[in-house]
Length: 116
Image (cartoon, rainbow, N blue to C red; front, side):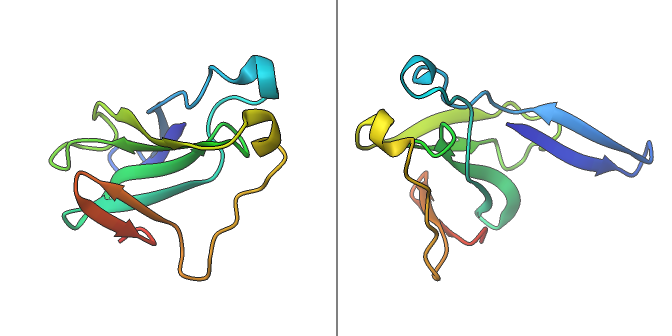
């Protein structure tokens, strides 16, 4: 997973790796990394977390968080698995479907919905 941002000081696009995603299911599924992603806020701070389905079309729900006081470009991000469901071989064939209400995740007791 890579954080991509525009650095106004250097007038260039920058990229920083913030996580590798799920890697332990590759032998079973042929997939690794992260699939569907959605950025969210914690305590009103934008881009302080990223929720992911892992690996690509996978069966693991994870959230990446950083200290909301830190700069996202230089912050240390941590990954926490929220849930693992189903058989990875069956789940590799299932696509994540977002409801009309949007994806929802819970981080540190805060409910995140549609990046807010």
